[in-house]
Amino acid sequence: MPTTYEATLEYAQGQDQTDTLYPFRERFIFPQHEGADVRYFCGNSLGLQPKSVSYLMEKELRDWGKYGVEGHFRAAYPWFSYHHFFTDRLAKVVGAEKDEVVAMNTLTVNLHMLMLSFYRPHNKRYKIIMEAGAFPSDQYAVETQVRMHGYDPEDAIIEITPQEGAHLIEDIDIINAIKEAGDSVALVMIGGVNYYTGQFFDLENITKAAHSVGAYAGFDLAHAAGNVQLQLHSWNVDFACWCSYKYLNSGPGGVGGAFVHERHGNNPDLFRLAGWWGNDEKTRFKMQKGFVPQKGAASWQMSNAPVFNMVAHNASLDIFEKAGLPALREKSIQLTGYMEFLLRQITHLPFEIITPSEPSRRGCQLSMLFHERGKEVFEALTQSGIVADWREPNVIRIAPVPLYNTYEDCYKFYEVLTLIS
Ligand SMILES: Cc1ncc(COP(=O)(O)O)c(C=O)c1O
Image 1 (cartoon, rainbow, N blue to C red):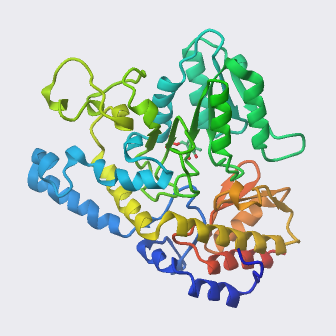
Image 2 (tube, protein in one colour):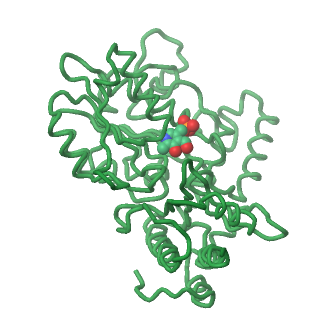
Image 3 (cartoon, rainbow, N blue to C red):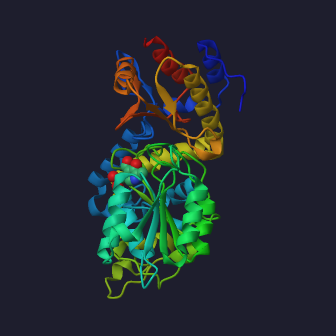
């Protein structure tokens, strides 16, 4: 990482000129502000639209018109097998084997489906450990799963909080809590990158700790997939799920993703709710009694693939494949480092960065916690054509995304802050 960052436009433009990933921004459509592209820092909420999506969507519509039901087998990408066309690229994004991932449903639905398999409380093993301040959907999902099994969330959910006066949760506190709760823990379920602080948890060691007490480890990777480098297979994670509309640029409500480690995915005795699309493909259309799970995560599928929803996903994963996740991550570390450097030059506004400084403990997002004037600063940014994201009660989140953000974007963000008196 350069130690010689400079807070000048010339420096920022110079960095963009030598950035080999710079041309990838040409593949995206930018919203407009006063006739120019906005400076878009909201890829942690909704990624930009790849330009290739409209062509590919039209092609799929044409195939539907041309073939009707026969499109299941005769479309250019036959719908019967649609999810197979990008599974290998999706697996790379999360560091998995091909059979360990599947695109299906949406995130919260997948979390419920996977918890039905991996949260099977019995006797004294019924507790779930999660981080305090998890995304509300995760909190609701965990709470209702606990209730469904007849437990009281107050007793069954252990929330790990930051230490007194801190904003972040220490990994070691999660690990120690797991060890302390021991064989009462059925499941550890954490948001891999926290949506509010941008903190990236140590998933490998949390998984190890969960396994050391005989519990499963599962993660919500909404803010991690396509943002940080994941090794779900080699970290031995039991299950994970994510959405595709943030860093994976696959459009609002885009298809979700799920990971099930091969040791579980290929275990037909592990309980899963079944639907015809999870059945062995060879016998799916025989319409026989008796569910025969296909290999791997794909056996958790219920319904036939939402093809139109997957078109953008296919297009976006193609871009990831071309850019390469290691190169994207390398740029991301430098770009977010630059943004952090610039923000630290600002001394006249009352905010602190609550995201960890160490690149290994964060993705591209930085969270600026305002002690006052937060909304006013947010509005000044918006009026200047900068798209950031306000999170109640007092945080501006910004995500310099390596696929389409530039050093100049970061400089312009900083410049707007310098102009606020
Ligand atoms: C961390 C996290 N979990 C869950 C969700 C909910 O996702 P969905 O509406 O796709 O179920 C979100 C949405 O932004 C999120 O950020």
